Length: 497
Image (cartoon, rainbow, N blue to C red; front, side, top):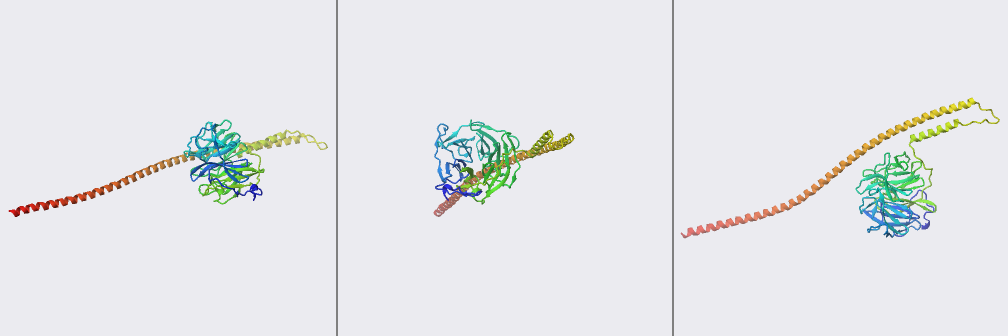
């Protein structure tokens, strides 16, 4: 295979490892990746508990890796520390000629989300100053570009608290704002994926908390700022976190992830217009493409789009580059999502309006045919009106059904609130038990110290006993000698007399 033409004749919906020339970057996971032009950029990540700070570039034409040599932007950054701090669990977005690195976990403690930049034209980098309601520092969040704004959702902060808040960064003013949403939001989570549909709907899929992983899909209407959980059809989807996703037209591709026990081997596709899941292909469970913390991007080569995946961890760290040519799929018009009751009501109103309009249509007499009588027209109008009345009844039934569904939704929200309180109570008990365990461990350590000191006291007592024995033996000897000396004098005195 000619390296320059590796994409020619590539089978659809089939992953292939690219034959990389020369050296490769360090294997890693939880890095950030983005494709600009025909180059894949990789930033940071983690390996064996160590954060990474390098920026690597993979040329999708000649299949060669290179390191991006960066310089410090003295104007926009007064930070004298390393160029790009070692970071994991961050996001990277292409904005003009710059790469924006948002948030992430780092040894450089920060209380708020940092935004760093890499200028691809000058190879300069630095921190960008932001203002407004800057969100707290976090990693494992999602960052989605919507026009000239970035929307971040969820993540895990530096104290390991899991979040489900929504913040927006205006890239033109560099001002943060917090978004107040309505209805029930997704449960707090991190290591999920996010995508944008029809420039209006923010989709959130999967992720995990400290206790469980998710396979649910949530939608935020960016016009009304209302959360919803739409009905999904198609193939069943397993729970997963640490996966990666990217949209090509109306198809959202999801790769990798896992549940902390095994990897997710399926490459999923969500048709975002029809809300139907399907499986594009599958790999073995120990395959690199079933890893957690991998990245997924799309690249346009010779007018055709490809999926590009890198890195991840699934028992071992990976640094292979995989490519897939997706099969062309149905791309319907963007859908405006409605609840079933609202959709039925809208259809009934549309039909009723159409019928009422048709009842007023003038029926001209046809040349050469028998004229239509006024009585026939009146009868037809009456029939239309009767049908209109029936449709209005259906509309009222749809409204009642909608009201019932809203009541059930309120009940579910109440149950969710109670479960959330119970969960918080259990978490409080767990914290109490952990504190008690820590106290017991401290007491055990103190007792071990005391036991160690008892050992030294026992040795000292034994030494004193030995000294006492020696002293008693010396006293007995002295007494014996004294008795012998006293007997000799009396004997001498008796002999002399």
